[in-house]
Image (cartoon, rainbow, N blue to C red; front, top):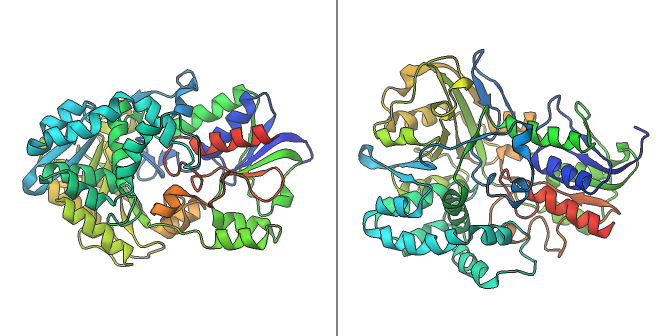
Length: 473
C-alpha cells in the first residue's frame, strides 16, 4: 500500500464510514480498510439459519438512525436505503398477558398509561416539540458550548438519575414505569446505576421525534447505502485487510480508528504514551449479550395481540423484573428471567423470508464474556408471552459473547455498546480530554462508539471525529 491518501480509516462500521464520508465531502481522498470480507461492521444482514431467511448479523434495532443529524444530512435514499415504520415504535410486555405500546405520538402513548398519562405528556411533549434542537445537543461531546442550554438542562439533569429511580419518582403506575424501563434496558449496565435514565429518555424521545423504523432488507442496507455514497464521492474501501500495527497503514495526513480502546492498545506497539495506555487499560466494557435468530413457520403468537403492531418488543413482565435482571448481570450472575430485546421485522418487511414464513432476532444481557448457554432462558421468556412460539421454530442460530467478538472484534466480551454505559463513561468516553477523538499520535483519531456521543447506529462519533481532524488539519 504505497499510495498516499489524505485519510485512512480502519474499520467499516457505521462510524468508520461516517468519518470517511465526512472527509470525502470535504474534497479529500480517503481509504477504508476492513478486516472482514464484508464491510459494515455491526450493521450487516445475511442468511444465518436457512436459505431465503435474511437475518441481521448483529444490530437490528436502530432507534437513533433517523434522528441522527449526520444521517439526515446524507442522500442515503438515493443509494437504496428505505425506512419502514411499524404501527408502533416498541411494545412492552406486562404481566397477565397485557402490553403497552410506545407510539410515535406522545398523546397516543400517554392515553394508554392511565394515571400517568399527564405525567408522561408533561415530560415528553416539550422535549418532542424541540427534538431537532435537542438531538443536536445530546449527540455531541459533553464538553461543548451548547446552543440551547436551557433545553439541554431540561433533558440533562433528570438524565443523571438511574433509570429505576427516575421511573419510580416520575410515575405512579406500572404501565408507565415498565414502558420507560424497557427503553432504558437497552443500556448495557445495571438500571440502578446513575445516568441510565438518559437512555430511557433519549430512546423514548427518538420514538416521538422520528419513530423507530427498520431498514427494508435489513441492517446491512444502512451500510450498503453509506458505502455506495462514499464511493460516489471518490472514497475507496478494501475488505479482507486486517491491520495488526499502525505501521502497516499507507501514508496519510489523518488516520481514523473505528476500534475500541482494547484493540488500539494492540495496534500501538508501544508508540502510545504510558499515561494514555493506562487510561485505555482502565476503560470499562459493559454487559455482554447472548444473541439468537430464528427461522419461523409463522408470526409469533403473542397473547397481547397489540404486540404485532411493533417491529421491536421489550420482554419483561414488570419494571422491577427488568431492573432485577440487569442488576443480576451487573453482579456477574445469570438472571432467571432475563430482559429480552426482540425484533420481528418480517411483519413489516415480508421479503426477508420465504412466503408465509418469518424471522425473529433477540438477545439478552449476560456478564461480559460469559459462556453461559441462554437458549432455554430466552425461548422460555418468549414462550411466556407467546405460548406456542417454540412450535414455530424451523431453525435457530445461537451466538455467545465469544462468538460475537470473534466475528466483530469491537464487540469485546459481547459488549455491543463499545464500552459500559456508566455515568462516567456517558459523560467522558474514552477520556476526559476536551477533544476526546484526538490521540497522542500526530494525525491519529479515534472514531468508534467508544467516543461521544456513544453507542447507537447514528454515525455521529465518526462524523464528529472527522470534523475535529479537518479543523486541525
